[in-house]
Length: 213
Image 1 (cartoon, rainbow, N blue to C red):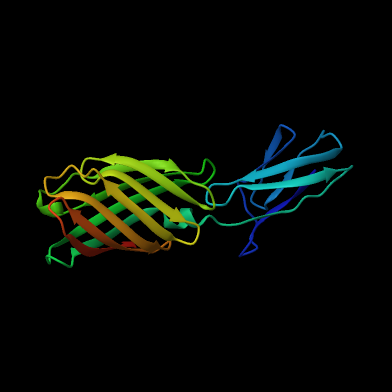
Image 2 (image 1 turned 180 degrees about the vertical axis):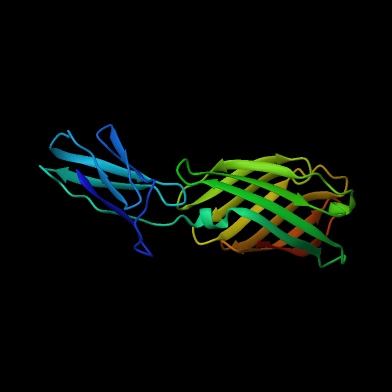
């Protein structure tokens, strides 16, 4: 079996793609070509993996010198990897502070790691330390859970279209019981609206924005 691998948008040949079938594999060169020999005829499955692109899987039928050309789609989460900066603002009380985030994504293992540093007087307290979260995702999205020293038991969900929902419960604060947030994300911007619920009753609302550098 042989063929070529190209990007679905640019049509450019992709090097460094690991193409595998029947327990054998080959890596594409600069021309995007691969070749795997001594395969058994019949129906089987071919996979292709490359950092920065979606994992590819396709059923094929091998019969003699079979040609299988592969088109791979860039992974949106790879485009979002890097350093982000932004700001949070509590619209109710007029307080604000800066934010930074670093995001890394392994598109082959489909895992991500995020380090978020929210600066300023968060929940009326001192400037908290940065916290790191990691988890798995699929092309349909991801749900990550974490026990945060600042925001409590956090659940964060992002869909394949960039819709964000989440909350932090059991917040370790004398005044705040929970925080809920919704928003949208693209590979270059993230916008959140949040609501803080107080233990004594009442709420405060605010916004947070991040831009990829």
